[in-house]
Amino acid sequence: MSNRIFLSPPHMNGTETAFVLDAFASNWIAPLGPFVDRFEQELGGYLNRHVCALCSGTSALHLGLLTLGVGPGDRVYCSDFTFSASCNIIRYCGAEPVFIDSEADSWQMDPALLEQKLSEDEKLGKLPKAVIVVDLYGISADYARILPILDKYHIPLLEDSAEALGSKRDGKLCGTFGKVSGFSFNGNKIITTSGGGALISDDEAIVKRARYLATQAREPKPFYHHVTIGYNYRLSNLLAAVGCGQMQTLEQRIEARREIFDEYVRQLSDIDGIGFMPEPKGAVSNKWLTVITIDPKKIRKSPEDIRLALEAENIESRWAWKPMHMQPVYENAECVGGSVCENIFNKALCLPSGSSLQPNDQDHVCECLRKALTK
Ligand SMILES: Cc1ncc(COP(=O)(O)O)c(C=O)c1O
Image (cartoon, rainbow, N blue to C red):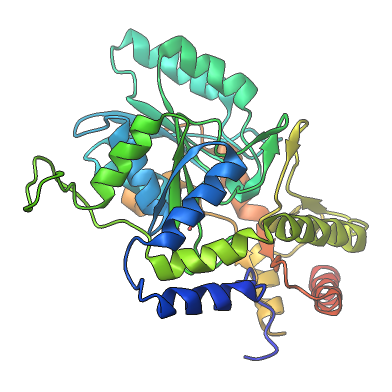
């Protein structure tokens, strides 16, 4: 396995080890501690938002919905083209998801479909309690169009920025568009805490509420006293130490992934039938993963053919996220459209994109890809 080229492996810069040893030396082996505070401050400073560090992106999004008051019987709209964690949280709350398809030229939630569905549901008296918009593959959704629509109907936005730390739209960082937002620091993300996440808001009361819910909803009393159901969702001090180290090289990691994307474009774009994920006008993506598309009319190979060919060379690649309306677990959920993201899913493949990918390894990936696509 030592010479395997991975999709998006963790990339340490060296300072993480010193910080973890420091946490050990001080015996802060606990969920909470000075590195959690520091990680929250550093991330909060970067985003100019209040932050609650948590054990996963999923827990951040779950608490996001709870702080927006979502409960049993509510409806919540969500991007159809995403990873299941974005919408499983709707079911955790006992609410019902409604999926909204993507725009073909951004791959993100289609604002026109969103508006159409809100207008229909308003007439039926069943507006959603919240809308979850995902910044998939680090590509920001079109908030200049989405936010005025949500404002018109007074629906709060939960922004799923799990994959989009450092991405921007019109100069504004992803994660700062939502009333509440969530990031993931899972091992494959642009920076990692091994496992971890964060809830973000400019409303301090929301972040305070999330922190309370994440620490078992413990009341400020000398004994254990509970008036609501809580969760054990906080990030451990050890993992926050890794996060503090990772924060030091965030900008370099974004730069590296953007260069990797550009190199793929340089080396592969002459192949007839190959496309690349979009970067809509005004969006600057962190290029968390480089995703290519394979036009079936020009290249008689499926994403699976290519994945297997790369696998034979010990190179990891991955199908794009399978849309939620295609998932058996959501077969009864409502969906508006669906053909756009289904079409992307059927022809897309995620390529090795980790910021530690060496130029000679990327050359090798490109050679193997060219062989697989053109033979
Ligand atoms: C779009 C999206 N949302 C949510 C999550 C959940 O994050 P986590 O794995 O940290 O729970 C992920 C990633 O894993 C993701 O890619």
